[in-house]
Length: 275
Length: 353
Image 1 (cartoon, rainbow over the protein chains, first blue to last red):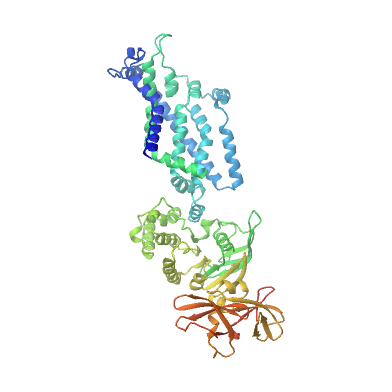
Image 2 (spheres, rainbow over the protein chains, first blue to last red):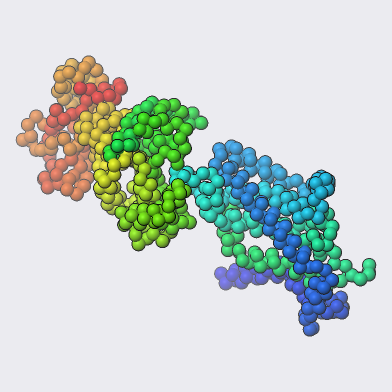
Protein backbone atom coordinates (compact mmCIF):
# COMPACT_ATOMS: atom_id res chain seq x y z
CA UNK A 1 0.00 0.00 0.00
CA UNK A 2 2.73 2.46 0.89
CA UNK A 3 4.44 1.57 -2.38
CA UNK A 4 1.27 2.44 -4.28
CA UNK A 5 0.94 5.66 -2.36
CA UNK A 6 4.52 6.61 -3.17
CA UNK A 7 3.91 5.84 -6.82
CA UNK A 8 0.83 8.01 -6.88
CA UNK A 9 2.75 10.82 -5.20
CA UNK A 10 5.50 10.53 -7.78
CA UNK A 11 3.01 10.62 -10.64
CA UNK A 12 1.37 13.73 -9.22
CA UNK A 13 4.76 15.36 -8.77
CA UNK A 14 5.72 14.60 -12.39
CA UNK A 15 2.42 15.96 -13.63
CA UNK A 16 2.82 19.17 -11.67
CA UNK A 17 6.41 19.59 -12.86
CA UNK A 18 5.38 18.91 -16.44
CA UNK A 19 2.58 21.49 -16.26
CA UNK A 20 4.47 24.18 -14.41
CA UNK A 21 7.87 23.89 -16.08
CA UNK A 22 7.17 26.12 -19.11
CA UNK A 23 5.61 28.80 -16.92
CA UNK A 24 8.49 28.67 -14.47
CA UNK A 25 11.02 28.83 -17.31
CA UNK A 26 9.23 31.86 -18.70
CA UNK A 27 9.33 33.59 -15.31
CA UNK A 28 13.03 32.77 -14.87
CA UNK A 29 13.85 34.09 -18.34
CA UNK A 30 11.98 37.29 -17.59
CA UNK A 31 14.14 37.80 -14.51
CA UNK A 32 17.52 37.03 -16.16
CA UNK A 33 19.96 39.66 -17.41
CA UNK A 34 20.26 39.48 -21.23
CA UNK A 35 23.62 37.73 -21.38
CA UNK A 36 22.42 34.86 -19.16
CA UNK A 37 19.36 34.08 -21.29
CA UNK A 38 21.17 32.55 -24.25
CA UNK A 39 24.43 31.51 -22.58
CA UNK A 40 25.69 27.93 -23.01
CA UNK A 41 25.96 26.04 -20.70
CA UNK A 42 22.47 27.00 -19.59
CA UNK A 43 22.08 29.29 -16.63
CA UNK A 44 19.08 28.06 -14.66
CA UNK A 45 18.66 30.64 -11.93
CA UNK A 46 19.09 34.33 -12.71
CA UNK A 47 22.15 35.77 -10.87
CA UNK A 48 21.12 38.32 -9.77
CA UNK A 49 17.42 38.52 -10.73
CA UNK A 50 16.59 41.75 -12.52
CA UNK A 51 13.41 43.67 -13.24
CA UNK A 52 15.01 45.47 -16.18
CA UNK A 53 12.88 43.65 -18.78
CA UNK A 54 9.67 44.63 -17.02
CA UNK A 55 10.79 48.26 -16.86
CA UNK A 56 11.76 48.23 -20.54
CA UNK A 57 8.48 46.61 -21.48
CA UNK A 58 6.34 49.23 -19.81
CA UNK A 59 8.49 52.14 -21.03
CA UNK A 60 8.60 50.99 -24.67
CA UNK A 61 5.00 49.82 -24.99
CA UNK A 62 1.70 51.03 -23.44
CA UNK A 63 1.43 47.69 -21.69
CA UNK A 64 -0.90 49.05 -19.04
CA UNK A 65 -3.28 50.09 -21.81
CA UNK A 66 -3.12 46.62 -23.36
CA UNK A 67 -4.04 45.08 -20.02
CA UNK A 68 -6.86 47.55 -19.57
CA UNK A 69 -8.19 46.81 -23.08
CA UNK A 70 -8.03 43.08 -22.45
CA UNK A 71 -9.85 43.47 -19.16
CA UNK A 72 -12.55 45.58 -20.77
CA UNK A 73 -13.07 43.34 -23.79
CA UNK A 74 -12.92 40.06 -21.85
CA UNK A 75 -15.11 41.39 -19.05
CA UNK A 76 -17.77 42.68 -21.42
CA UNK A 77 -17.70 39.49 -23.52
CA UNK A 78 -18.03 37.38 -20.35
CA UNK A 79 -21.00 39.36 -19.05
CA UNK A 80 -22.70 39.19 -22.42
CA UNK A 81 -22.06 35.45 -22.89
CA UNK A 82 -23.29 34.57 -19.39
CA UNK A 83 -26.35 36.81 -19.66
CA UNK A 84 -27.39 35.45 -23.05
CA UNK A 85 -26.41 31.93 -22.01
CA UNK A 86 -28.56 32.16 -18.88
CA UNK A 87 -31.56 33.27 -20.93
CA UNK A 88 -31.12 30.40 -23.35
CA UNK A 89 -30.40 27.82 -20.64
CA UNK A 90 -33.35 28.98 -18.53
CA UNK A 91 -35.66 28.47 -21.49
CA UNK A 92 -34.11 25.16 -22.58
CA UNK A 93 -34.26 23.60 -19.15
CA UNK A 94 -38.02 24.03 -18.98
CA UNK A 95 -38.87 22.75 -22.44
CA UNK A 96 -39.65 19.17 -23.34
CA UNK A 97 -36.87 16.62 -23.32
CA UNK A 98 -36.88 16.44 -27.13
CA UNK A 99 -36.57 20.16 -27.73
CA UNK A 100 -33.89 20.47 -25.10
CA UNK A 101 -31.73 17.66 -26.45
CA UNK A 102 -31.97 18.98 -29.98
CA UNK A 103 -31.27 22.55 -28.95
CA UNK A 104 -28.19 21.51 -27.02
CA UNK A 105 -26.91 19.37 -29.88
CA UNK A 106 -27.44 22.21 -32.35
CA UNK A 107 -25.41 24.47 -30.08
CA UNK A 108 -22.68 21.86 -29.86
CA UNK A 109 -22.58 21.68 -33.66
CA UNK A 110 -22.10 25.45 -33.78
CA UNK A 111 -19.17 25.17 -31.42
CA UNK A 112 -17.42 22.86 -33.88
CA UNK A 113 -17.03 25.61 -36.52
CA UNK A 114 -13.32 26.56 -36.57
CA UNK A 115 -13.02 30.29 -35.78
CA UNK A 116 -10.54 30.74 -38.63
CA UNK A 117 -13.39 30.17 -41.08
CA UNK A 118 -15.11 33.16 -39.55
CA UNK A 119 -12.12 35.46 -39.86
CA UNK A 120 -12.81 36.75 -43.37
CA UNK A 121 -16.57 37.21 -43.09
CA UNK A 122 -16.10 38.81 -39.69
CA UNK A 123 -13.43 41.14 -41.02
CA UNK A 124 -15.67 42.21 -43.88
CA UNK A 125 -18.53 42.79 -41.48
CA UNK A 126 -16.38 44.74 -39.02
CA UNK A 127 -15.01 46.94 -41.79
CA UNK A 128 -18.43 47.55 -43.30
CA UNK A 129 -19.75 48.57 -39.88
CA UNK A 130 -16.75 50.81 -39.29
CA UNK A 131 -15.85 48.89 -36.14
CA UNK A 132 -12.12 48.50 -36.77
CA UNK A 133 -10.36 49.52 -33.57
CA UNK A 134 -13.69 49.46 -31.76
CA UNK A 135 -13.77 47.04 -28.79
CA UNK A 136 -17.28 45.96 -29.82
CA UNK A 137 -15.68 44.19 -32.79
CA UNK A 138 -14.03 41.82 -30.30
CA UNK A 139 -16.69 41.72 -27.58
CA UNK A 140 -19.46 40.45 -29.85
CA UNK A 141 -17.53 37.59 -31.53
CA UNK A 142 -15.97 36.50 -28.22
CA UNK A 143 -19.33 36.38 -26.51
CA UNK A 144 -21.08 34.61 -29.37
CA UNK A 145 -18.30 32.08 -30.03
CA UNK A 146 -18.54 31.09 -26.37
CA UNK A 147 -22.29 31.10 -26.13
CA UNK A 148 -22.67 27.33 -26.77
CA UNK A 149 -20.25 26.57 -23.97
CA UNK A 150 -22.00 28.97 -21.59
CA UNK A 151 -25.42 27.51 -22.41
CA UNK A 152 -24.22 23.95 -21.85
CA UNK A 153 -22.68 24.73 -18.48
CA UNK A 154 -25.59 26.85 -17.26
CA UNK A 155 -28.19 24.39 -18.48
CA UNK A 156 -26.59 21.56 -16.54
CA UNK A 157 -26.54 23.81 -13.48
CA UNK A 158 -30.16 24.87 -13.86
CA UNK A 159 -31.21 21.26 -14.35
CA UNK A 160 -30.22 20.53 -10.74
CA UNK A 161 -32.85 22.92 -9.46
CA UNK A 162 -35.95 20.96 -8.48
CA UNK A 163 -39.03 21.67 -10.56
CA UNK A 164 -41.01 22.30 -7.39
CA UNK A 165 -38.78 25.25 -6.44
CA UNK A 166 -39.59 26.75 -9.81
CA UNK A 167 -43.30 26.14 -9.29
CA UNK A 168 -43.12 27.67 -5.82
CA UNK A 169 -41.49 30.78 -7.25
CA UNK A 170 -44.14 31.02 -9.96
CA UNK A 171 -46.86 30.81 -7.32
CA UNK A 172 -45.06 33.41 -5.23
CA UNK A 173 -45.45 35.73 -8.19
CA UNK A 174 -42.03 35.65 -9.83
CA UNK A 175 -42.18 35.85 -13.62
CA UNK A 176 -39.68 33.97 -15.82
CA UNK A 177 -37.12 36.79 -15.77
CA UNK A 178 -37.25 37.29 -12.04
CA UNK A 179 -37.08 33.54 -11.47
CA UNK A 180 -33.93 33.46 -13.59
CA UNK A 181 -32.26 36.28 -11.70
CA UNK A 182 -33.47 35.60 -8.16
CA UNK A 183 -33.73 31.81 -8.09
CA UNK A 184 -31.88 30.11 -10.93
CA UNK A 185 -28.65 32.09 -11.05
CA UNK A 186 -28.05 32.18 -7.29
CA UNK A 187 -28.77 28.45 -6.99
CA UNK A 188 -26.58 27.61 -9.98
CA UNK A 189 -23.84 30.02 -8.92
CA UNK A 190 -21.04 27.45 -9.36
CA UNK A 191 -22.13 26.84 -12.94
CA UNK A 192 -22.43 30.55 -13.63
CA UNK A 193 -18.95 31.20 -12.21
CA UNK A 194 -17.50 28.30 -14.18
CA UNK A 195 -19.01 29.55 -17.40
CA UNK A 196 -17.82 33.08 -16.69
CA UNK A 197 -14.25 32.01 -15.98
CA UNK A 198 -14.00 29.83 -19.07
CA UNK A 199 -15.36 32.57 -21.33
CA UNK A 200 -13.04 35.08 -19.70
CA UNK A 201 -9.99 32.88 -20.24
CA UNK A 202 -10.89 32.30 -23.88
CA UNK A 203 -11.42 36.00 -24.50
CA UNK A 204 -8.26 36.97 -22.69
CA UNK A 205 -6.16 34.52 -24.70
CA UNK A 206 -7.72 35.13 -28.10
CA UNK A 207 -5.16 36.37 -30.58
CA UNK A 208 -6.25 36.08 -34.20
CA UNK A 209 -9.25 38.41 -34.15
CA UNK A 210 -7.56 40.81 -31.76
CA UNK A 211 -4.54 41.13 -34.04
CA UNK A 212 -6.72 41.60 -37.12
CA UNK A 213 -9.31 44.05 -35.82
CA UNK A 214 -7.21 46.19 -33.48
CA UNK A 215 -4.57 47.98 -35.55
CA UNK A 216 -4.06 51.05 -33.35
CA UNK A 217 -1.73 50.62 -30.41
CA UNK A 218 -4.15 52.27 -28.01
CA UNK A 219 -6.81 49.63 -28.78
CA UNK A 220 -4.68 46.48 -28.73
CA UNK A 221 -5.38 43.75 -26.23
CA UNK A 222 -2.54 42.11 -24.38
CA UNK A 223 -2.11 39.15 -26.76
CA UNK A 224 -1.79 41.41 -29.77
CA UNK A 225 0.43 43.66 -27.68
CA UNK A 226 2.89 40.86 -26.99
CA UNK A 227 3.19 40.22 -30.72
CA UNK A 228 4.26 43.81 -31.22
CA UNK A 229 7.21 43.48 -28.85
CA UNK A 230 10.14 43.42 -31.27
CA UNK A 231 13.83 43.99 -31.05
CA UNK A 232 15.69 47.07 -32.28
CA UNK A 233 16.79 45.20 -35.42
CA UNK A 234 15.32 42.42 -37.50
CA UNK A 235 17.86 39.93 -36.16
CA UNK A 236 17.41 40.63 -32.49
CA UNK A 237 14.73 38.82 -30.52
CA UNK A 238 14.11 40.53 -27.16
CA UNK A 239 13.61 37.26 -25.21
CA UNK A 240 13.70 38.95 -21.84
CA UNK A 241 11.00 41.48 -22.68
CA UNK A 242 8.84 38.86 -24.40
CA UNK A 243 9.02 36.65 -21.34
CA UNK A 244 8.19 39.58 -19.11
CA UNK A 245 5.22 40.39 -21.33
CA UNK A 246 3.96 36.81 -21.14
CA UNK A 247 4.27 36.83 -17.36
CA UNK A 248 2.40 40.11 -17.08
CA UNK A 249 -0.33 38.83 -19.38
CA UNK A 250 -0.74 35.57 -17.47
CA UNK A 251 -0.73 36.77 -13.89
CA UNK A 252 -4.25 38.29 -13.95
CA UNK A 253 -5.70 34.98 -15.18
CA UNK A 254 -3.89 32.97 -12.54
CA UNK A 255 -5.12 35.32 -9.82
CA UNK A 256 -8.67 35.09 -11.16
CA UNK A 257 -8.70 31.30 -11.28
CA UNK A 258 -7.19 30.95 -7.80
CA UNK A 259 -9.81 33.34 -6.50
CA UNK A 260 -12.68 31.24 -7.80
CA UNK A 261 -10.97 27.85 -7.66
CA UNK A 262 -13.42 26.28 -5.22
CA UNK A 263 -16.47 27.36 -7.12
CA UNK A 264 -15.11 26.20 -10.46
CA UNK A 265 -14.26 22.78 -9.07
CA UNK A 266 -17.77 22.22 -7.77
CA UNK A 267 -19.24 23.69 -10.94
CA UNK A 268 -17.28 21.37 -13.20
CA UNK A 269 -18.13 18.25 -11.22
CA UNK A 270 -21.78 19.24 -11.17
CA UNK A 271 -21.80 19.34 -14.91
CA UNK A 272 -19.92 16.06 -15.08
CA UNK A 273 -22.23 14.10 -12.81
CA UNK A 274 -25.31 15.25 -14.61
CA UNK A 275 -24.01 14.12 -17.98
CA UNK B 1 -67.10 34.21 2.62
CA UNK B 2 -64.78 34.05 -0.41
CA UNK B 3 -62.97 30.94 -1.56
CA UNK B 4 -65.61 28.69 -3.03
CA UNK B 5 -63.94 26.45 -5.58
CA UNK B 6 -65.99 24.46 -8.05
CA UNK B 7 -64.54 21.98 -10.52
CA UNK B 8 -66.71 20.53 -13.27
CA UNK B 9 -65.78 17.62 -15.50
CA UNK B 10 -62.03 18.20 -15.14
CA UNK B 11 -60.05 16.02 -17.49
CA UNK B 12 -56.33 15.86 -18.07
CA UNK B 13 -54.69 13.88 -20.84
CA UNK B 14 -50.90 14.11 -20.94
CA UNK B 15 -48.91 14.41 -24.15
CA UNK B 16 -48.12 10.70 -24.14
CA UNK B 17 -51.84 9.89 -24.05
CA UNK B 18 -51.98 9.01 -20.35
CA UNK B 19 -55.33 10.03 -18.86
CA UNK B 20 -54.56 11.43 -15.41
CA UNK B 21 -58.01 12.85 -14.72
CA UNK B 22 -61.29 11.83 -16.23
CA UNK B 23 -64.32 14.01 -15.63
CA UNK B 24 -63.68 15.00 -12.02
CA UNK B 25 -66.24 17.32 -10.41
CA UNK B 26 -66.21 18.67 -6.88
CA UNK B 27 -67.05 21.66 -4.76
CA UNK B 28 -64.84 22.99 -1.99
CA UNK B 29 -66.22 25.57 0.41
CA UNK B 30 -64.56 28.11 2.71
CA UNK B 31 -63.68 27.06 6.22
CA UNK B 32 -63.73 23.42 5.28
CA UNK B 33 -61.05 20.92 4.34
CA UNK B 34 -61.52 18.81 1.24
CA UNK B 35 -59.09 15.88 1.13
CA UNK B 36 -58.11 14.34 -2.19
CA UNK B 37 -57.40 10.74 -1.32
CA UNK B 38 -56.10 7.93 -3.47
CA UNK B 39 -53.13 5.68 -4.18
CA UNK B 40 -50.15 7.08 -6.05
CA UNK B 41 -50.92 7.69 -9.70
CA UNK B 42 -54.62 8.30 -9.12
CA UNK B 43 -54.40 11.89 -10.34
CA UNK B 44 -54.76 13.71 -7.05
CA UNK B 45 -51.58 15.76 -7.41
CA UNK B 46 -52.45 16.55 -11.02
CA UNK B 47 -55.81 17.87 -9.85
CA UNK B 48 -54.07 20.08 -7.28
CA UNK B 49 -51.63 21.40 -9.87
CA UNK B 50 -54.49 22.22 -12.21
CA UNK B 51 -56.23 24.18 -9.46
CA UNK B 52 -52.95 26.03 -8.81
CA UNK B 53 -52.57 26.83 -12.49
CA UNK B 54 -49.26 24.99 -12.77
CA UNK B 55 -50.89 22.65 -15.24
CA UNK B 56 -53.72 23.19 -17.69
CA UNK B 57 -56.77 20.95 -17.84
CA UNK B 58 -57.54 19.26 -21.15
CA UNK B 59 -61.25 19.73 -20.56
CA UNK B 60 -63.55 20.91 -17.79
CA UNK B 61 -64.18 24.10 -15.86
CA UNK B 62 -62.79 25.53 -12.71
CA UNK B 63 -64.31 28.53 -10.94
CA UNK B 64 -63.28 30.39 -7.82
CA UNK B 65 -66.13 32.39 -6.31
CA UNK B 66 -68.01 32.06 -9.54
CA UNK B 67 -65.24 33.43 -11.76
CA UNK B 68 -63.59 31.04 -14.22
CA UNK B 69 -59.90 30.39 -13.58
CA UNK B 70 -59.00 29.59 -17.20
CA UNK B 71 -55.98 31.55 -18.29
CA UNK B 72 -55.42 33.07 -14.85
CA UNK B 73 -51.68 32.69 -14.13
CA UNK B 74 -50.69 30.83 -10.93
CA UNK B 75 -49.55 33.97 -9.13
CA UNK B 76 -52.89 35.71 -9.71
CA UNK B 77 -55.03 32.84 -8.41
CA UNK B 78 -54.63 33.74 -4.77
CA UNK B 79 -53.62 30.25 -3.72
CA UNK B 80 -51.08 29.16 -1.11
CA UNK B 81 -49.37 25.94 -2.12
CA UNK B 82 -47.51 23.60 0.22
CA UNK B 83 -45.27 21.24 -1.73
CA UNK B 84 -44.54 17.67 -0.78
CA UNK B 85 -40.82 18.36 -1.10
CA UNK B 86 -41.32 21.77 0.63
CA UNK B 87 -39.52 23.43 -2.30
CA UNK B 88 -37.95 26.10 -0.10
CA UNK B 89 -35.46 28.53 -1.59
CA UNK B 90 -32.14 27.10 -0.34
CA UNK B 91 -30.22 30.35 -0.78
CA UNK B 92 -32.62 32.50 1.24
CA UNK B 93 -33.14 32.72 4.99
CA UNK B 94 -36.39 31.60 6.56
CA UNK B 95 -37.54 35.21 6.79
CA UNK B 96 -36.80 35.85 3.11
CA UNK B 97 -38.44 32.57 2.13
CA UNK B 98 -41.58 33.76 3.87
CA UNK B 99 -41.31 37.32 2.60
CA UNK B 100 -40.63 36.72 -1.09
CA UNK B 101 -44.24 36.52 -2.21
CA UNK B 102 -45.01 39.78 -0.40
CA UNK B 103 -41.90 41.51 -1.75
CA UNK B 104 -42.92 40.61 -5.27
CA UNK B 105 -46.37 42.05 -4.62
CA UNK B 106 -44.81 45.29 -3.38
CA UNK B 107 -46.25 45.09 0.09
CA UNK B 108 -44.70 47.90 2.20
CA UNK B 109 -41.60 46.84 4.12
CA UNK B 110 -42.98 47.46 7.58
CA UNK B 111 -46.03 45.37 6.74
CA UNK B 112 -43.82 42.53 5.44
CA UNK B 113 -41.73 42.57 8.60
CA UNK B 114 -44.87 42.51 10.72
CA UNK B 115 -46.38 39.59 8.86
CA UNK B 116 -43.14 37.61 8.79
CA UNK B 117 -42.85 38.00 12.56
CA UNK B 118 -46.48 37.07 13.04
CA UNK B 119 -46.30 34.01 10.82
CA UNK B 120 -43.03 32.87 12.36
CA UNK B 121 -44.54 33.15 15.82
CA UNK B 122 -47.63 31.26 14.76
CA UNK B 123 -45.50 28.37 13.59
CA UNK B 124 -42.88 28.53 16.34
CA UNK B 125 -40.16 29.66 13.96
CA UNK B 126 -39.30 32.97 15.63
CA UNK B 127 -35.79 31.88 16.68
CA UNK B 128 -35.03 30.45 13.26
CA UNK B 129 -35.89 33.32 10.92
CA UNK B 130 -32.27 34.11 10.06
CA UNK B 131 -31.35 30.50 9.28
CA UNK B 132 -31.25 28.91 5.88
CA UNK B 133 -33.35 25.83 5.03
CA UNK B 134 -30.33 23.50 5.13
CA UNK B 135 -29.83 24.40 8.80
CA UNK B 136 -33.36 23.30 9.76
CA UNK B 137 -34.77 19.92 10.69
CA UNK B 138 -37.37 18.27 8.47
CA UNK B 139 -40.20 19.35 10.73
CA UNK B 140 -38.96 22.94 10.79
CA UNK B 141 -38.63 23.00 7.00
CA UNK B 142 -42.17 21.73 6.82
CA UNK B 143 -43.33 24.65 8.96
CA UNK B 144 -41.54 27.14 6.75
CA UNK B 145 -43.28 25.62 3.71
CA UNK B 146 -46.56 26.02 5.55
CA UNK B 147 -45.68 29.56 6.55
CA UNK B 148 -44.92 30.52 2.99
CA UNK B 149 -48.51 29.68 2.12
CA UNK B 150 -50.02 31.19 5.28
CA UNK B 151 -48.28 34.55 5.05
CA UNK B 152 -50.14 35.37 1.86
CA UNK B 153 -53.54 34.83 3.48
CA UNK B 154 -54.91 33.30 0.30
CA UNK B 155 -58.49 32.37 -0.43
CA UNK B 156 -57.40 28.83 -1.16
CA UNK B 157 -54.81 26.54 0.40
CA UNK B 158 -53.45 23.68 -1.67
CA UNK B 159 -51.46 21.07 0.22
CA UNK B 160 -49.68 18.29 -1.61
CA UNK B 161 -48.93 15.51 0.87
CA UNK B 162 -47.33 17.99 3.25
CA UNK B 163 -46.62 15.40 5.94
CA UNK B 164 -45.33 12.51 3.85
CA UNK B 165 -41.65 13.40 4.25
CA UNK B 166 -41.80 13.40 8.05
CA UNK B 167 -41.12 10.41 10.27
CA UNK B 168 -44.13 8.73 11.86
CA UNK B 169 -43.89 10.44 15.23
CA UNK B 170 -43.49 13.93 13.82
CA UNK B 171 -46.20 13.29 11.28
CA UNK B 172 -48.75 12.59 13.99
CA UNK B 173 -47.70 15.70 15.88
CA UNK B 174 -47.93 17.88 12.78
CA UNK B 175 -51.25 16.33 11.86
CA UNK B 176 -52.72 17.54 15.12
CA UNK B 177 -51.16 20.97 14.60
CA UNK B 178 -52.59 21.17 11.11
CA UNK B 179 -56.00 20.21 12.44
CA UNK B 180 -56.01 23.06 14.91
CA UNK B 181 -54.60 25.40 12.28
CA UNK B 182 -57.36 24.48 9.85
CA UNK B 183 -59.93 25.24 12.54
CA UNK B 184 -58.64 28.79 12.73
CA UNK B 185 -58.56 29.31 8.96
CA UNK B 186 -61.53 30.74 7.18
CA UNK B 187 -60.13 29.85 3.78
CA UNK B 188 -60.77 26.78 1.67
CA UNK B 189 -58.30 23.92 2.00
CA UNK B 190 -57.57 21.22 -0.56
CA UNK B 191 -55.45 18.52 1.01
CA UNK B 192 -53.85 15.79 -1.09
CA UNK B 193 -52.85 12.58 0.66
CA UNK B 194 -52.49 8.86 0.05
CA UNK B 195 -52.85 8.18 3.78
CA UNK B 196 -56.48 7.40 4.57
CA UNK B 197 -55.97 8.05 8.29
CA UNK B 198 -54.69 11.55 7.50
CA UNK B 199 -57.65 12.23 5.25
CA UNK B 200 -60.12 10.92 7.83
CA UNK B 201 -58.67 12.95 10.67
CA UNK B 202 -58.15 16.26 8.86
CA UNK B 203 -60.90 16.54 6.31
CA UNK B 204 -64.51 17.64 6.48
CA UNK B 205 -65.07 15.93 3.18
CA UNK B 206 -63.03 13.41 1.23
CA UNK B 207 -62.78 13.00 -2.52
CA UNK B 208 -61.58 9.46 -3.22
CA UNK B 209 -59.87 9.20 -6.60
CA UNK B 210 -59.23 6.01 -8.51
CA UNK B 211 -57.35 6.14 -11.81
CA UNK B 212 -58.43 9.70 -12.49
CA UNK B 213 -62.09 9.20 -11.67
CA UNK B 214 -64.08 10.13 -8.60
CA UNK B 215 -64.72 6.99 -6.63
CA UNK B 216 -66.67 8.72 -3.88
CA UNK B 217 -67.12 12.21 -2.45
CA UNK B 218 -68.40 12.14 1.12
CA UNK B 219 -67.64 13.14 4.70
CA UNK B 220 -65.12 10.79 6.41
CA UNK B 221 -67.74 9.09 8.58
CA UNK B 222 -69.95 8.23 5.66
CA UNK B 223 -66.96 7.05 3.65
CA UNK B 224 -66.30 4.55 6.38
CA UNK B 225 -69.90 3.57 7.12
CA UNK B 226 -71.29 3.51 3.59
CA UNK B 227 -68.47 3.12 1.05
CA UNK B 228 -69.95 3.62 -2.40
CA UNK B 229 -67.90 0.92 -4.05
CA UNK B 230 -65.32 -1.77 -3.47
CA UNK B 231 -62.41 0.57 -4.15
CA UNK B 232 -63.35 3.03 -1.44
CA UNK B 233 -64.36 0.19 0.87
CA UNK B 234 -60.95 -1.42 0.72
CA UNK B 235 -58.97 1.84 0.57
CA UNK B 236 -60.60 3.47 3.58
CA UNK B 237 -60.37 1.79 6.94
CA UNK B 238 -57.41 0.07 8.53
CA UNK B 239 -56.91 -2.84 8.78
CA UNK B 240 -58.47 -3.48 5.41
CA UNK B 241 -61.91 -4.89 4.90
CA UNK B 242 -62.21 -8.56 4.03
CA UNK B 243 -63.90 -9.07 0.67
CA UNK B 244 -65.55 -12.33 -0.31
CA UNK B 245 -66.74 -12.89 -3.81
CA UNK B 246 -69.70 -15.20 -4.27
CA UNK B 247 -73.18 -15.59 -5.67
CA UNK B 248 -76.73 -15.25 -4.51
CA UNK B 249 -79.32 -18.00 -4.58
CA UNK B 250 -82.03 -15.42 -4.02
CA UNK B 251 -82.08 -15.75 -0.20
CA UNK B 252 -78.48 -16.38 0.83
CA UNK B 253 -75.02 -15.36 -0.22
CA UNK B 254 -72.79 -18.33 -1.00
CA UNK B 255 -69.02 -18.28 -1.10
CA UNK B 256 -66.78 -21.24 -0.39
CA UNK B 257 -68.60 -23.20 2.32
CA UNK B 258 -69.96 -20.02 3.86
CA UNK B 259 -73.61 -19.08 3.64
CA UNK B 260 -74.71 -15.59 4.77
CA UNK B 261 -78.33 -14.45 4.75
CA UNK B 262 -78.90 -11.59 2.31
CA UNK B 263 -80.79 -8.50 3.44
CA UNK B 264 -83.94 -7.67 1.57
CA UNK B 265 -83.95 -5.28 -1.36
CA UNK B 266 -80.45 -5.87 -2.66
CA UNK B 267 -81.59 -6.21 -6.22
CA UNK B 268 -81.18 -9.12 -8.54
CA UNK B 269 -77.42 -9.40 -8.95
CA UNK B 270 -76.29 -13.02 -8.73
CA UNK B 271 -72.58 -12.29 -8.57
CA UNK B 272 -71.76 -10.20 -5.55
CA UNK B 273 -69.12 -9.30 -3.02
CA UNK B 274 -69.47 -9.19 0.72
CA UNK B 275 -67.28 -6.69 2.56
CA UNK B 276 -66.62 -7.36 6.25
CA UNK B 277 -64.64 -4.93 8.39
CA UNK B 278 -62.29 -6.72 10.80
CA UNK B 279 -63.60 -4.63 13.69
CA UNK B 280 -67.16 -5.90 13.07
CA UNK B 281 -66.29 -9.57 13.40
CA UNK B 282 -67.03 -11.21 16.78
CA UNK B 283 -64.67 -13.90 17.97
CA UNK B 284 -65.65 -16.44 20.64
CA UNK B 285 -65.62 -20.06 21.68
CA UNK B 286 -68.22 -22.78 21.10
CA UNK B 287 -70.82 -20.84 23.10
CA UNK B 288 -71.02 -18.11 20.43
CA UNK B 289 -74.47 -18.50 18.92
CA UNK B 290 -74.77 -18.92 15.14
CA UNK B 291 -71.03 -18.62 14.75
CA UNK B 292 -68.92 -20.21 12.05
CA UNK B 293 -66.19 -22.69 12.78
CA UNK B 294 -62.82 -21.01 12.18
CA UNK B 295 -59.16 -21.93 12.20
CA UNK B 296 -56.61 -19.34 13.34
CA UNK B 297 -53.91 -18.77 10.77
CA UNK B 298 -52.09 -15.69 12.01
CA UNK B 299 -52.15 -13.32 14.97
CA UNK B 300 -50.62 -9.83 14.67
CA UNK B 301 -50.51 -7.90 17.95
CA UNK B 302 -51.07 -4.16 17.38
CA UNK B 303 -50.79 -3.00 20.97
CA UNK B 304 -54.20 -2.68 22.51
CA UNK B 305 -55.73 -4.86 19.84
CA UNK B 306 -54.74 -7.93 17.89
CA UNK B 307 -55.42 -8.58 14.23
CA UNK B 308 -56.38 -12.22 13.68
CA UNK B 309 -56.48 -13.95 10.34
CA UNK B 310 -58.80 -16.99 10.19
CA UNK B 311 -59.73 -19.57 7.66
CA UNK B 312 -63.47 -19.89 7.58
CA UNK B 313 -65.14 -22.38 5.26
CA UNK B 314 -62.27 -22.23 2.83
CA UNK B 315 -62.12 -18.43 2.91
CA UNK B 316 -59.84 -16.00 4.66
CA UNK B 317 -61.32 -13.63 7.23
CA UNK B 318 -59.65 -10.95 9.30
CA UNK B 319 -60.87 -9.94 12.73
CA UNK B 320 -59.77 -7.32 15.22
CA UNK B 321 -60.00 -8.28 18.89
CA UNK B 322 -59.07 -6.59 22.12
CA UNK B 323 -55.69 -7.87 23.21
CA UNK B 324 -56.92 -8.63 26.73
CA UNK B 325 -59.19 -11.34 25.38
CA UNK B 326 -57.89 -14.88 25.75
CA UNK B 327 -56.10 -16.13 22.68
CA UNK B 328 -58.48 -18.30 20.71
CA UNK B 329 -57.57 -21.96 20.74
CA UNK B 330 -59.40 -24.98 19.39
CA UNK B 331 -63.08 -24.75 18.69
CA UNK B 332 -62.95 -21.01 17.99
CA UNK B 333 -66.02 -19.58 16.33
CA UNK B 334 -66.51 -16.28 14.57
CA UNK B 335 -69.76 -14.45 14.02
CA UNK B 336 -70.36 -12.02 11.18
CA UNK B 337 -73.10 -9.52 12.11
CA UNK B 338 -75.18 -9.58 8.97
CA UNK B 339 -76.42 -6.01 9.41
CA UNK B 340 -72.83 -4.72 9.25
CA UNK B 341 -71.83 -6.50 6.07
CA UNK B 342 -71.33 -4.24 3.04
CA UNK B 343 -72.70 -5.62 -0.24
CA UNK B 344 -71.30 -4.80 -3.65
CA UNK B 345 -72.03 -5.85 -7.18
CA UNK B 346 -69.20 -8.08 -8.38
CA UNK B 347 -69.62 -6.81 -11.92
CA UNK B 348 -69.39 -3.06 -11.30
CA UNK B 349 -68.01 -2.90 -7.78
CA UNK B 350 -70.84 -0.54 -6.80
CA UNK B 351 -72.58 -0.68 -3.46
CA UNK B 352 -75.86 -2.53 -3.28
CA UNK B 353 -78.60 -1.48 -0.86
